[in-house]
Image 1 (tube, rainbow, N blue to C red):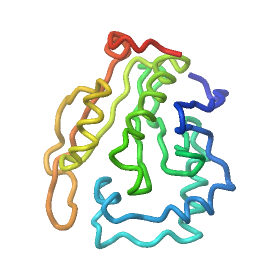
Image 2 (cartoon, one colour):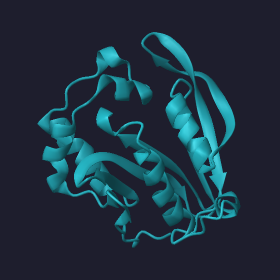
Image 3 (cartoon, helix red, strand yellow):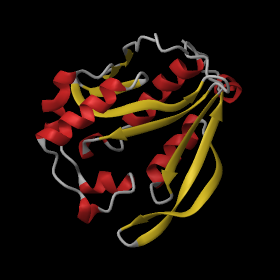
Image 4 (cartoon, rainbow, N blue to C red):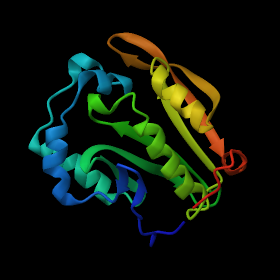
Length: 188
């Protein structure tokens, strides 16, 4: 894990994780902000604004500036993002965040496939020992996918998210390298 890390392109069939580029702004603008998807990230659906050129530009620039960020392409179309943040080199740990942008991509296993590609990179070439994530309690589809990938619920931050005027728990989940390796997946 060094700052000279070069983000590789990771591929699983029609799903590709690739380095973000500044020329992705038009694709991000086209993907929009679906209120139901944004709600799963903890955003009040009534507060969701359309993507503007400026907000798309800022979103893309943010991910371009992140060392461990991949855009998710499905059938060569920008469809989401997955990235590692809060890296601690001493403890060999990081937090993963993932988000699909297009409603038509939900429920087809794309998020799970992207997560598996990232975990192989994180526990392989990046030599991490622990990956953590947090997810809002009503995002049962994501929680089920994370458990299927091998993440374990480690706790809850009670009523830490207010969405649509209602409080919800954040579920904290984690996975250790030995747990990942015990799944027989190995690393690339």
